[in-house]
Length: 80
Image (cartoon, rainbow, N blue to C red; front, side, top):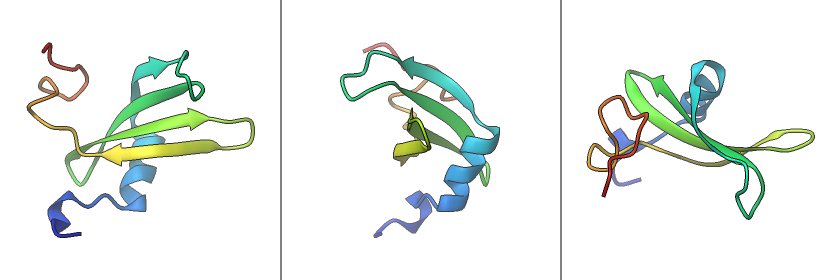
């Protein structure tokens, strides 16, 4: 809350879900199948981790990807 420019709204998440793309898939996650989506909201890259359930899509987390961790375009992680 102390950094309003880093806030992610429900509208931002909806934009990612409606127009984003799956960039990583985790079919063997110990908590169940999940995946990482990349989308753009107000020209900002947003990552949303989701888990498909029988009756709904669970949103696990949403965050603004870091330039230090992600390559240009935010689709691929940088090598350590």
